[in-house]
Length: 103
Image (tube, rainbow, N blue to C red; front, side, top):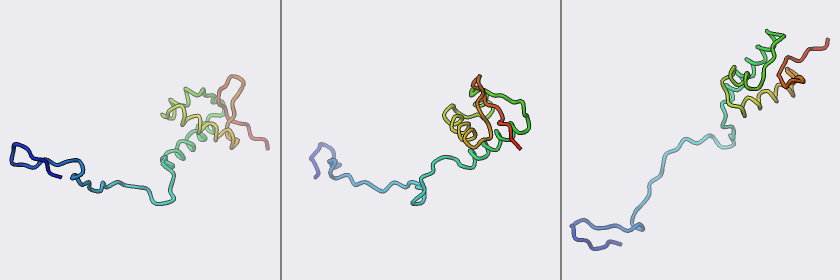
């Protein structure tokens, strides 16, 4: 619908405005992972190697966050996964230490 106005140009209503498609990159169907899996795996390998190479190493959550350069939530997820996998454990002082291997 065109409304009359004082200038020579017609005034359009909202109903006259036509949209156009927006181009967006979408992940392939079935892919739900939004995290950088390669970076996470590199961080996990790094922290496992640190504890293996330095048997007496004990780190607090804050120290581990600083070492890895990640936020608290990501660091907790990594440390929890490593604890469940048996690579590290939390001691009585709430520090993360290497879990000793029983032969």
